[in-house]
Length: 164
DNA sequence: GCCACCGGTGGC
DNA sequence: GCCACCGGTGGC
Image (tube, rainbow, N blue to C red; front, side, top):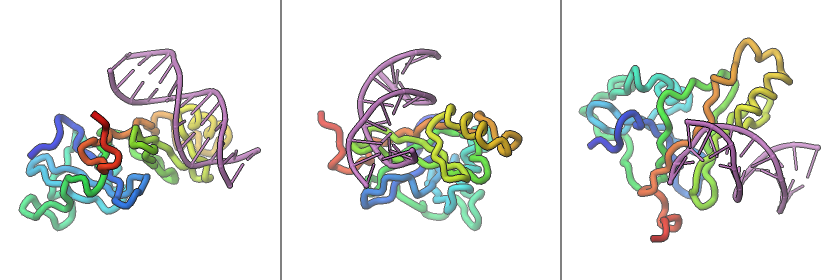
């Protein structure tokens, strides 16, 4: 069944055992609604960058079709977080990371720049380009999206469940 | 002095 | 009311 409405069918996940960063990448097929693991961050981001115009289907994953069993079950053995669709592809040399806060209140989005600096917001990107003008032609602020994913509360560990 | 982490808020 | 964004700071 279709887990979510509309376009929000892109996800990343925290693996179990208290991982704080999203480290499993998965997308939902628009036809059979099974989840397919995308082995690399880059592959995941490629799909995510154009998700609305070019929705994911199982056959886009090599040697995979809707007849195959799901790659991963949506359950609370991991915490699932759902990325927004159509986030620009991360510029080459940068790495986009999602870090869960203590208490699972929200995730922070960072870009790690090629020089190791961690960029936290658009103003940091501007500062980085100012200090490293060789990137002026390659990247612009619009290549970055710091929007955090939606945390799926039904997949939080029991210890983090919201008090009623 | 840096940076991981968190709190607050302005704009939608 | 939410959340993207930014400022502040405690611990190293």
